[in-house]
Length: 285
Ligand SMILES: C[S@@+](CC[C@H](N)C(=O)[O-])C[C@H]1O[C@@H](n2cnc3c(N)ncnc32)[C@H](O)[C@@H]1O
Image 1 (cartoon, rainbow, N blue to C red):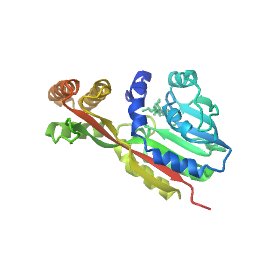
Image 2: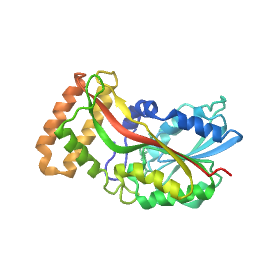
Image 3: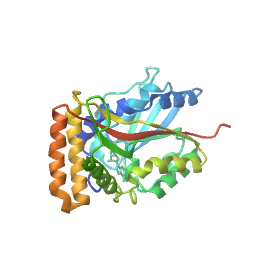
C-alpha cells in the first residue's frame, strides 16, 4: 500500500491483482484491438507499471506483436515484472518487455517516440491536473491510443450479503476523510485523488482524443473467499489514512475499523470500491 512518497509493496499489488483484473472493462480492450487491427507491431508504454499487472491483463487481448516498456520509480517492483513468466499476445507470440526505473514527475518527449499505446493502471489518483495535461499533450503529439484502467472515483462503501449498499453515517464520514487524504502530494504534483476520474477524460478530450469511460468497480462480495484478505488490507489503509487526516478522531475511527473488520471476517458485509476505466483514441483520419 502507498505512503506519502507513493511507494507500494509488491505483496499488496499481488493481493489486488485478481480484483483489478475482474473489474476491468473488457470491451475497451476489444475496441482497442479493433483499432490496432492493421498493425503488425506495437510499442506500449506502461506508466507506473509496478510488477506488470496491466501487461498481464492487456497484452493477451491484443493480436499484435508487442514491445512493452514498463516504467516505475521502484526498481524492486520492476525486478518482479522482469522475473514473472513470459506473457503471450492473442496470437501466441511472446511479448517483449523492457523496464526503466525513473521518476515520472517529468514526462520526457523521447519516452513517447514511436509509441502506439500509452497505458497505466491505478496511478491517476496520485497525479496532478498539470501532470495529466502534460501527458494528454504527449499522447496527442505522438498519435498513440491510451487505455487507463482503475482510476478510483471516490465511491467506497459496504454492501450486505445481497449486494445492497449499506447506508451508515460513520462509513460515510470515513469515506470523506479517506478521499481528502488522497489529495496530498504524492510525487507527481498536488494529487487529484478521486477527482482524477473526471479530470482525466476531460483533459484527454481537450487534447483532441475521442474518449470513452466506464465503471470498473472492485466488488468484494460478502462471504467470498478473497474478501477478508483484500478487505482487511483495504480497511487498514483506509483507517490509517483517516487517522492521518484527522488525528483527534483516532479513537472512534479505530473502533469503526475493528467493527467493520469483524463484519468482513464473519461474511456479514462486502465492499465496493469505485473505479473507472478510460479509453482514448486519436480522431479518425
Ligand atoms: C497503485 S500502484 C499500481 C501499479 C500497477 N500499475 C498495477 O496496476 O498493479 C502505483 C504505481 O505507481 C508507481 N509510482 C508512483 N509514483 C511514481 C512516480 N513519481 N514515478 C514513477 N512511478 C511512480 C508506484 O511505484 C506503483 O508501482
